[in-house]
Image: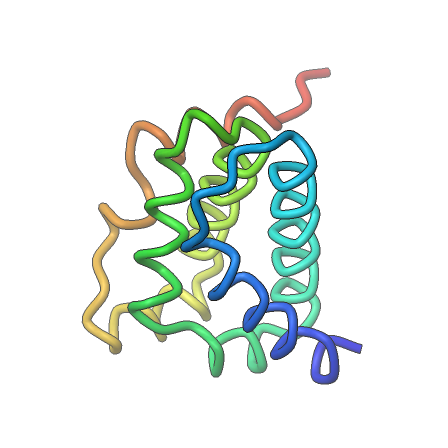
Length: 119
């Protein structure tokens, strides 16, 4: 499923992450797309790696800073943090010249921790 869906989903994210819409509907749509991309990248890291580039990472970083879109900013931050947490993907990202601070920083760490379940 990831091989068929993820390229289209990343294309949607690339176009959607640059829009300036701040409606609750847009926030929910983007958050759902980000969560779906996250799940699909975990399911098929190889196809995920083939779609990761500086433009997407920069867009995700910008989205994670957008406090006007609380759901989307959290989803983008969690996705970034999770990408770096996956050693296979992290190695690929390093080879592409990307560094840890784009993925693990105060914002992404706080978002990631906010979703952790404490028993």
